[in-house]
Length: 126
Image 1 (cartoon, one colour):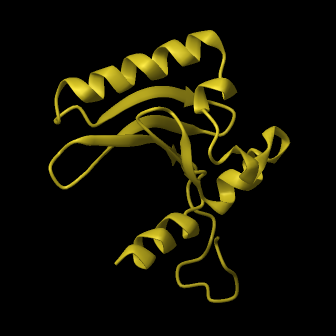
Image 2 (cartoon, rainbow, N blue to C red):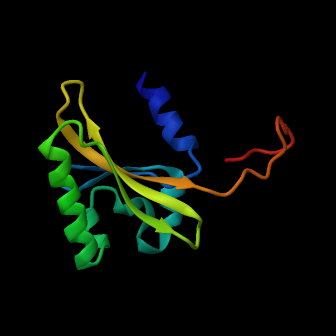
């Protein structure tokens, strides 16, 4: 099953960066590697995510992680609207099969309408 989950992440059109509870970057999908190339791209894997953010963002990430840890029902929080890219951004808790917090990731939901024709086999969207 693991290869299927990895494929889902790697085919997503949004950047996906997965961190553990110590804020260490464990995984970046190809879109994230390209998006953050100027900051190190793939070399960011294994680094602390907090080092990539300003003090206010660091504080908010820590607060959100603490909120995730308070209750296993605390799993997703809206963090900001990116007007330039027309997307909403959320932080999402990652939990093991027992409900224990094991990490988190940032989820991007783009609001632009799809421009591809339905069942257009002439182009790939990824």
